Amino acid sequence: MSYLLQPHANDCEPNNSSKILPTISEFHTTFDVEAMKSIETGEANQEEGVFLTWKDLWVTVSNGKNGRKPILEGVKGYAKPGQLLAIMGPSGCGKSTLLDALAGRLSSKIKQTGNILINGHKQALAYGTSAYVTEDDTILTTLTVGEAVYYSAQLQLPDSMSKSEKKDRADFTIREMGLQDAVDTRIGGCGSKGISGGQKRRVSICIEILTRPKLLFLDEPTSGLDSAASYYVMSRISSLNQKDGIQRTIIASIHQPSNEVFQLFHNLCLLSSGKTVYFGPVSAANKFFSSNGFPCPSLQNPSDHFVKTVNKDFVQDTEKGLAGGLSTEESIHILAKLYDSSEINHQVEKEIAQIIERDSVSMVNGSHANFYTQCLILTRRSFLNMYREVGYYWLRLLIYGALALSLGTMFFDIGSSSESIQARGSLLVFVVTFLTFITVGGFPSFVEDMKVKVAFK
Ligand SMILES: Nc1ncnc2c1ncn2[C@@H]1O[C@H](COP(=O)(O)OP(=O)(O)OP(=O)(O)O)[C@@H](O)[C@H]1O
Image (cartoon, rainbow, N blue to C red; front, side):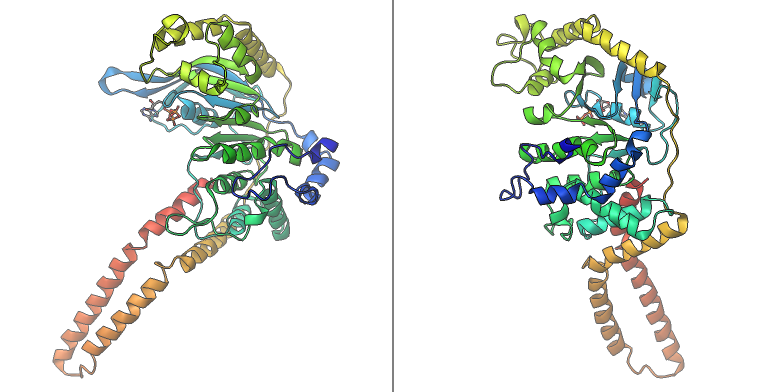
């Protein structure tokens, strides 16, 4: 298992330039007791990873009176344990839709046909086997990194695990994502600076991998990050399998990976207007493009070249051009046709057939905390959030104090005559109305809290 202790050559955190490579002692703490236990007992090897295949996948949406508009047009592909698949393409080509379809998250208004098979069978993903990291980081900004992950662990992990085991899992996952130095730092948001964008992405991923899912979907994991931070986030994700011994299947939609990030992926699914232009090994993509008349110019990032070649949103300068001065539309059409008849496509079809034919174990449903524990944890987390939010408790307390003082002076010593009954009534109506209106002010905070709770499902 010596490879487990090999740090990645460029594993550096951009916000912490003094710490270019983790020290040996850090690596020893990263691969701590939990990882070693699961590796020693062979726990990870006993359980099979998730093989995902999809074929003839069509996704359509209603287009008003004009019938239905296709978003994905008969795409196919596969994802295997221990491998990273990148879904790439120009904006609006259907990356998120494909990811949502594979994760079973499409809304009921969207129609989907075709075969999506998990371990060769049509089955729903069992609880705890998959996780989906959305593009937006839905984390409570008032919590520290440690608190956010620990509360999540208490909510998501089963009651059969003790509190200390949940804490250990949370600590281990934090170290896995390289967040140990930021554990006591608040997440922060607009108005209160907290952890960096890259760290925020890693906290979101941390929360999602707490249940040790074997299938991980990531929607734009590097959006909004500079190239160094993107590399750091993606290299952490790609090294997860080596760290805890779980052979994860990782599928990520990604916009503009740097060359270093691109090389971390095993397979590439390149889409254009919902059609597959290329699906196959990342290492073979360059050869496929160059042998078909679209060589990557020297000094250009291959992934940029692929996306640029299949992007028809902007008029290309055909003189400078794509191969032979073709329009982008024609180039995409040619590439898609050449791919269909290519050896890579045949290999993909063979691979899909082999995955479907394999003998596979059906997935076991995991469990999460029971209703009572969830209520308790959510109340505690919500209280902490409101306690730290200045505008929630403390500003209100100040307003209530000022109001009590002014009402007290106005209605001081109103006596016990019959006129005072009317004054008492007015006071009561005013106080009730005021309290009702000020309660509405707490609604935005409640909505934020709701988003985080929904994200846990
Ligand atoms: N529910 C929907 N109703 C109508 N059109 C939709 C719906 N969902 C997606 N689309 C359309 O499908 C296309 C693909 O959308 P999708 O979000 O998958 O693209 P994307 O490749 O992820 O884009 P980006 O990279 O910009 O996030 C877009 O043109 C979008 O407008």
